[in-house]
Image (cartoon, rainbow, N blue to C red):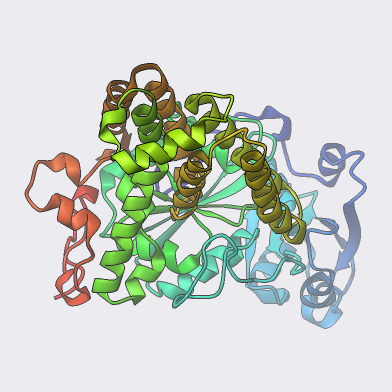
Length: 503
């Protein structure tokens, strides 16, 4: 369950009764029994040494040098510890600055203390007072910030999210340096206790959208949150739809841009990807580098991407429909060329296209699963060999190879791989409609797809906006990029309290 004071003034009680009860070292040893990385050490505090403190931590999650230099050394310094006769005196002295660590939390709840230990904290346990002091001393041996691999950056930042939540929040903070950037943290997963951060800009985000997200996160009750699919399919409006409804990005600059638009961001500990909501279909056709490119260039590239979307989805279906049912729509010279190429092919046009689409899917899957150098080689050589051999063996016609290859290349031109996967499914549905009913079947499936897209919502925002507004100029706003000085207002569909982005 996700609990945070920004969403709920009174957090609900935790459900797991296993970690309730008074705090003690014996209870911690029972909870972490058969955990070889659970470490404890007894320390004597004060000049007389009559107060005993138990230090507990999980080896590998904490930094040994920080524990030694910032906590253990000050605690064992007799002159700094002074005269402390009771454990409560020791607690107050430590809270007043007896140790060098800046972050310290007083815990009287066993559930919170166990969560701290599992997230890289060290605890000083006072058995007599039934309290503990928790210090954040996470290990720094994490993957360094590198360049994005899925989203190429031409003029933007060269850093990408990592698997460490606090590193990712720092990357966003460096770009949005304002206390208006709110960061609400909680845990999801009954057994994994995965930390999740919700980021938004106060005064820009819609309160209704924030409330919807809070309710859906609180309803999410799973054993573990180890993949984005578990989170995404649990909070979106239409989990059965193949079209993506949360935008994934590995670039902090793009993540920050969406926050400045009034959207909400999600970061999950252990996953090097940020999630953005609410989103529309048009957002999946944009790239971050459009913000650093002249508006005329970015407008032309936007038109190219939308043309690629139509070609990726419709080209195989249109070819099959015209070749099988509507030959009169094909120019005469092209029709004669197609007939000549099809004379020695033993299969129908439908089987040709279906077979080549399957072959391209296999080649693509092989290229993704193999290591990078081998995968690139297999993808290129495999496509060349399969296509050339199929044509020479007269199994398929050259025109079918061209149509399928052009559709696959157009699909690769889409900025979002999640949208590209949905387009491949839509392409198959359109192709089946063309096989059974020609252009009539293609038109029917297209209408059903448009109806499905129009019925989708993303946290109160229609998926097909701005086309679904019924206002003039929406098609122009979706396809073309306005000049940067003229883009003065935020997207009205987000219902942001402050719509103006510049004077």
